[in-house]
Image (cartoon, rainbow, N blue to C red; front, side):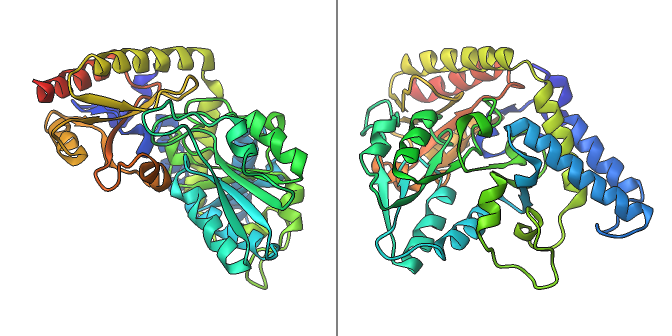
Length: 383
């Protein structure tokens, strides 16, 4: 689907490394180049034309991302990465915690939605409790009951992924948000891996904060928080004294990358133009064919089989390390990832550390030939 819109796909490579970063859509590339050629290279907040144009692109980017994620433009915060924004946010939350307060994380999450909360809790004398996905060899699902099991009246925040960046599992977010409400806890959702695969609607979901990264959904390297504005207003982040104290500005440290925001705006507009039912059907077909082919390949073990999942899979091949498998595939111009992809808690949970596993992921620009090449190359190892 729309493969012609992605210049980075020209050539012979099968790009199955989308979970680590997608190719940029042509509109985002053009928007960034046009911005840098336009003479708009001014800081924001001025009275002259170039500065006013910068103000406009920032506001348009906030509006487009808010529309994409179902949020409020006043709650859209831009930063260098999701990790940096989460570190900043968790540290700010940490100053509101007291000894005995609790934060709930999950072992399904990327470490960017775990370690910041561990650090904040340690500094505050608070406790972190972990929700466990299904055990080793299971489907690796994360139902609401798994989170409810570790909630208490002292739970202040729940940090949970919208989709595992390792095995693709989509937790029961509506159930988890509802459970949080029953104990008066707030919810921070890591949607970095989910946004290119599912329409997200923060308002309908009822989460307090959602974090993502535009480079995972066909844009440039910019991190994004989509928060309820009142949550941003209640918290007091570290900031420079002369900088604005308004929300969301006070959460953005330093000068924003305005040319990248032009790309974010274009990528968000592109995503909103997609036929999402078609995207889902296309990705599910690629995933289903690949899972069936790998399951029939001797020596291959697939890790995770959640009923609701993105088109992402991880596997191991008997007799080979994940790095050896990835190298074999790279020699055949197939791009995958190996290791733990920062899903640190999950890999310890599965006893896959330090060997790791191979991860392949499909997004809507992939095609059946990519899946066929992957299966053929893995089959060579099995033979």
